[in-house]
Length: 492
Image 1 (cartoon, helix red, strand yellow):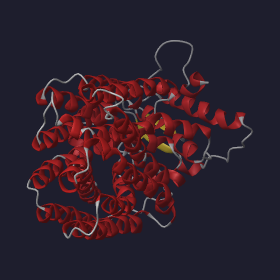
Image 2 (cartoon, helix red, strand yellow):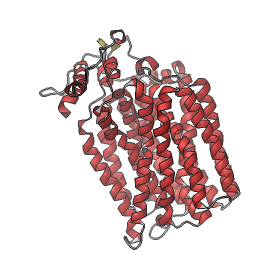
Image 3 (cartoon, one colour):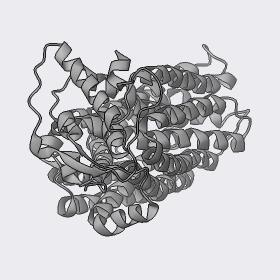
Image 4 (cartoon, rainbow, N blue to C red):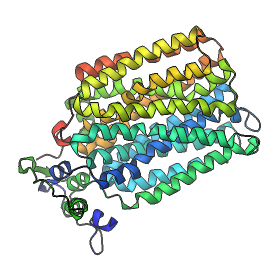
């Protein structure tokens, strides 16, 4: 079945048309007309699992704080923030480097390179011997995940029909929190001293993460290369074989496909790559409004999420006296609310529309964060009540954060999509994600609720600004083909 989907011939590499050849293709129209089916579900499982891995990683790093602060590692609170930032710096570097490669050599090759790096570095994290070795391995783990973001986001966008692209993208990005829940359970198990020696429990947790990555590597073997990428790079016959194989999955199940809209045929001039000068021109000149919107959304959500989630274990321990081995129980409802948000609100991004829903989710998240921060400041709740308020906040904030990835993935041309995702992820994470954990780690270390509340207000202000930007300058991309939202640079 996999060979039919990938459209591989008898032997040898696929034929490639000379660069500069003008081709006439209906690949995009054929993909967008497909009904939702088992093929799309399998794509989501095999590719969307990336966010499950990221959620597992982030949660483990946060939930294992207590164990890492004990011998033999003996991390300080600053060390915890440094390790979190190392992971995020790695994600920035990986996103940029692998994003550049994804647009050049294809989506599929990068699936395996980035995932292999992730699972090797995660397992190595369990072998760390001091703060510096731990930071190096966390950097490499982040690089693998950052590269995954670019290859996976672009591929999913290019394989999913336009009418359900918003909901699909939000649910896939929201699956981060399934990984967070798994990480919470895993941390609870490995940190039980009566089950596992605390000296080794945190190491076992990272080994398990690497093992999960190995299973996912096998799941991806049948995923085809993006037909849209193949067509623009001259592999027209291969692109047609891939789409024909996908269509055959539906017809074999007795489904009659609607006719292809001939008016949506496109002429493309094949190219091996897109020069960086053309990338810069597209992002800074022809699509500068989309660039401004993407940056606003990505920076706000990166600060919001990474600052709060990476340091929540510190807050529980410092201000509520929650033992490190119990932190996972508080992260579970946190994760539940964050997954249910994209799942239940995602449909509205395809029906009500992108702009109103982006404005609403970012705006309500800002208000709720400020309110929850104030309740924390005046000590209204204990750890259970405070966690419940965060569950409500992140129900909306998770949908908002996922919509940022949706926005940057669908509003730039195919030829620079992966690199655009990488650039926005890198800048957003570099400004908001790396600074957030360091700032909050320092604020928590002061032991002052007033100072931590100031950090919450900063996050709320960034989300409020992003809400206004999304409402005024956002793109109404709901139900529209990617080629209609942003015309390919290769269009002839």
